[in-house]
Amino acid sequence: MYIPALFKGSRCTEEELDALAEKYSGYTGLKKEYVLGSSLRVTLDDFMTELLKDKKLMIGRYDGRITGPAGIASIEGGYLSQEKIINECISKNPFLKVWVLCGYYDAATPFYAAEYTFDHVFLNDDLRDNVSFTYYHSGHMIYMEKESFDKFRKDAEAWF
Image (cartoon, rainbow, N blue to C red; front, side, top):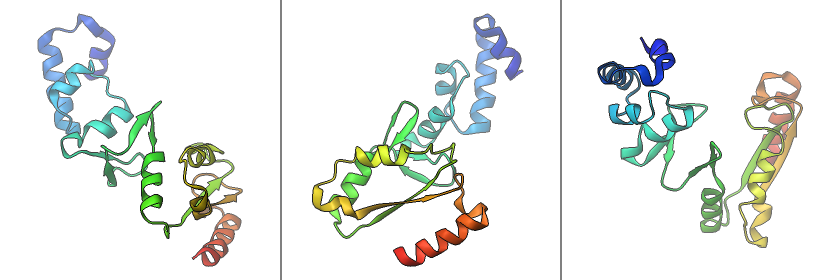
């Protein structure tokens, strides 16, 4: 019923749309009105921000069991913008250190995206050294390849 309705588009009757939105809502937990308002086409980013909107939370992209405050973060260009959160956390706690691990072959977090993000946190000069980067010849999951995992373990022991 769902796929044919997407193909029918505006030729769907109100009754068909209502029934599909009711089922969609039941499967996903989204409000039926939201599903109808999105013409039955809810993107992943919309789902992440809408599901727990009434609790002012959003769900994580890599693990839906993880939630974060939706009011602090914002979605820009389809991606969660963390700059404000990072700035507030480090500014409020100057002892907080952030260690960013980067995989050269990571398609989920493309190479140099982390550097770009932290370049736009705009920390005071005396707090910039609180952020450090380490690079691995791996993808997103640096622990999958033994060489990267071994390097990570040594790096972690030194960092902590």
